[in-house]
Length: 293
Image 1 (cartoon, rainbow, N blue to C red):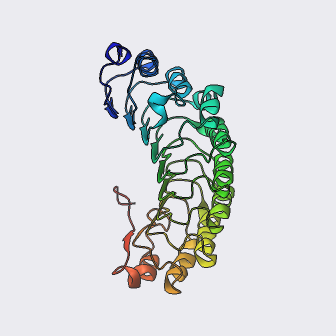
Image 2 (image 1 turned 90 degrees about the vertical axis):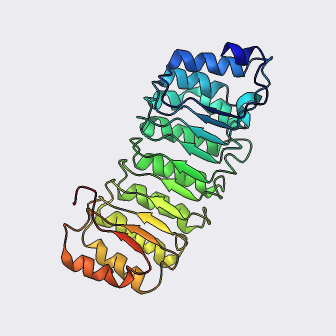
């Protein structure tokens, strides 16, 4: 931090501090040093994953996102920390996002932070209210294991409908608390072709049930997600919806699909496996979890 504050390393664009035991104190010092007037650093990639960052440290970083040292970040990785919803709900993040901080993001990974709807709803709302077109370059968004529920999906859907993330290619929402209503909100935007180049969607390990999976099938049928190449809906408590999904494949509503995860949705029913057997040459289908379930 002292080196950065002194104006050294002016050509630094990528900073990887993953797995370094960085705490809130360290992140605060880093944010202040790069935002220092003497610093000429213009980061494009910042990896702070697998550290000991909490909401206080994150708030210090978020407050500086609009500064020139952080404004050009394209790749931001804060996964595997302990940043809760209060860090994301803080007004400093909302102010930075509304003033264009994050406008050049292409890849954002916030996975495995206890963000919850408390933090993600105001974040998506702030992006929706941004004066500039927020995240116009975003292609990959990873929110795995972030304790997100249906309210977050409604807020994300609204952001999508505004066209702010139209270039999104990969969306990972696995290991969250998404129920059928959340799937419905998300599919509303996708059916409206709000993300026309989306090819990878991971909704595994949620609480969609048959109702949620059937809504995805309808999404294939009416368009909007027919361009998906990789779909994972494993471990969502579905069962009867597997027949509906196989019908979508049979009728050609999933022409681009190459990988499909359905593990944990049919209790090992051999009949379900037979339903999907005709498509195994074209599609790599995951029938089982690593533990055999």
